[in-house]
Length: 290
Image (cartoon, rainbow, N blue to C red; front, side, top):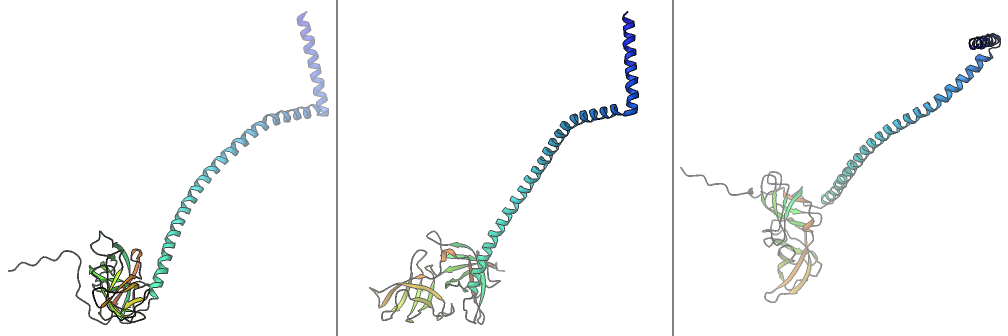
């Protein structure tokens, strides 16, 4: 009974399938329906997968873009630092160029040849043996002992000792400095002497009847043969009669700021025989006799 029922159902399904197959062969409606359903199912499955793929791809691209941006940012920071360093260096070069141009405008007697030099070090103040600076020229390139040094403002000093390519300069503020000077307006003569850093300069042997005035500029007279004539040296700060000599008590301050020297000009005599070369360092040993 049950087997018979199964055969009847199977036969009915077979007949229905054959009918539908024949009908589909003529109309193709089932093919179109199955294709549409298949496409919808395929789209329903592929769209989420595609969205996930796009999300992952976009994240990956952004990650690499971020890495590139970080690398570029690091490179740009390094470039900015380099350019800032160059800018600072160029700023210092420009400041030095301006100072050197001012130095080159200093009028110099044709008998003296100007040579530029850098200040390498300085020894000034109460703990220094001498008020002095060290410059980048020696007897081999224009820095012989006795050579005057100036800036665009005025006289700095003169070379005291020299090696081949460096030299020690005795500043006009040192107590061992002696300079023959004129007062620029009254033409009073005197000898300018240093008293050490932080102290005023002293002008000795100025006659009592001289009309030296405060703020008058003192210039080199050239009478001592050590310096060209007419270089500003100091400015008179006070004038008073001396209590114990027939001369005036005159004090002055340097026209050059000795604490901020960076470049100077050496005035090398161009038409005179220079003093013998004096080298820096300990004396040479005396050769033994035969």
